[in-house]
Length: 138
Image (cartoon, rainbow, N blue to C red; front, top):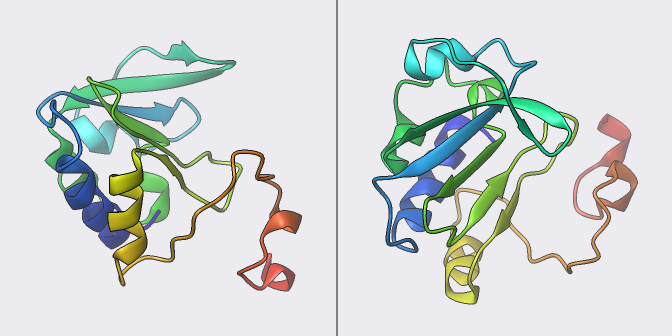
């Protein structure tokens, strides 16, 4: 997810959590942009099978202190303390997924600044399943 897209998505998500001041931002331990997010190093924590650096902060943190506006400087996972939604951008995938309430998803789908579509729960995450983008470019 690009910087400006993360900011727009963050604005919508802020309205769909009771804990916008306590969010978690997880970066894969393979990402050297981690220190640009908070200015300090952290020890990796396992999330599933992969090591991550996990930081906390206000949801607005997605728009600041991240470093250069490139896709690699975004957290791979971010979610609020109340777990009202979760954003996932795995380093091995070209798509960002958002799990959220129906109302939140409707607001995200209405944004003109991002490419968004509803996906079924059995949606494949393989590039060959992408029916929107030009797969030949990848």
